[in-house]
Amino acid sequence: MTHAVKGQKFGTLFTWFDQDGDGQLTHEDMRGTAAAFAEVAAWGDEADLAAMRDAFGRWWRLLLTHGDADGDGRVSRQEFITVMEREVTSPEHFEGAVMAIIDALMNALDTDRDGVLSRDEYVRMYDALGIPPQRSGEAFTRLDLDGNGVISREEFRSAVSDFYLSTDPDAPGSHLLGPVGPPS
Image 1 (cartoon, rainbow, N blue to C red):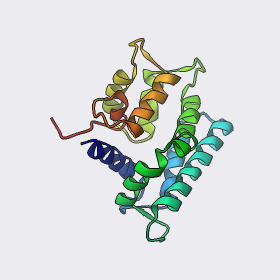
Image 2: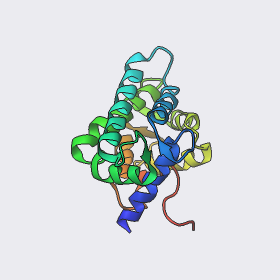
Image 3: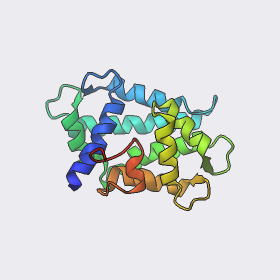
């Protein structure tokens, strides 16, 4: 079951990243995903934009180096799931690839610079990334662990860690991109 939970989450992530829907991740797909993330940043927020682009670049290099088994410059769904489980989520790569994006994203989303994400800021991000507001609103409620109506940097980082590292389908962060597990 634990492998299945991560496989499902990483499969959902693959579909999200596969910008042209051809079943293969390419450098252009990752650049498109980075561009979608960049759209949530305020105009002129060059530092956070550069941090996101750099982190997506590191992530792509990890995918190619450790996941492109046939050397064709593309990463299939299965190659992606395998490299995510073995390399991208390993301690030596996770912080520099995934969490670097999250930190820059948090900075970009926190438009009023109060150090937390309001429901509106959070839903706006996922709306820009193609996640329906109903789903992101439900996720916001799960991620607001202390129930104070905002998501702190720690809560956001914890949720993202749950998504990538946890095998618990009920962990709050497991629901970042939608429900995990068979439909109820």
